[in-house]
Length: 251
Ligand code: PXP
Image (cartoon, rainbow, N blue to C red; front, side):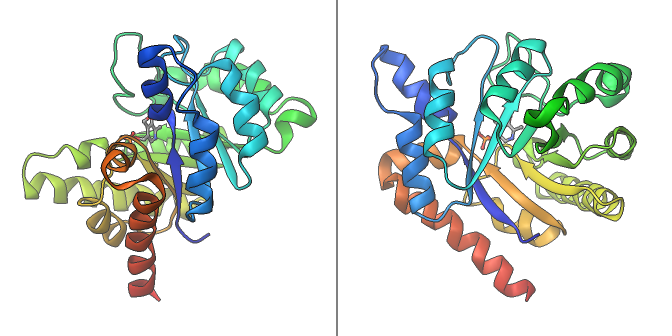
């Protein structure tokens, strides 16, 4: 599966909610992103509804033509909404009430039994759940990759935040090495390899060059922020250009 850009539109909703107005509309942003070439859209419906809200779900479902990735905590409430929306991908993430953003990957050892006996069967239940790709947001360490494999996950999403926030080039390189090893391990077991968190126009190229087998690259905060100055379509195209350049190098 070739690597492609999925745009996370959560912070369009952050801007809307800051004034309690009805604009900007996440579904409208999604349409602009797709028209500019993005392969799909990611949204995270948090338990506290701080950005995406329930009424956005049907609007996003209706307007997104490409891949729709529903990022969520593994709660009964979210699984019920997942079955209503029927996205292409369900990305499971840890969710902390006090955090500003998702702070790291799932610790699969801690949730393994719960995911195996409750979460996976509940997600895959019935016609609504049988087609969704389950992706687990994990840090690039072998134990969590092994956990995802043993759970029978369809995909992992590698947490790139530690790479993005590395304070020295050598720390960044060490994290790229860990990401590459994790990607190879997941790919060898037949899992799709997605990635995201903290990626921007500066750190994206070294990441794409270093890590093999990448599929969906999920980018939100930096892209939406840059779009304020340069326009959403232009900014999506700038990210697409970076991805296409690296794909060209790898041909
Ligand atoms: N992937 C996951 C699982 C996330 O939680 C987030 C942030 O919501 C992203 C990707 C996108 O990260 P960023 O907004 O830093 O690009």
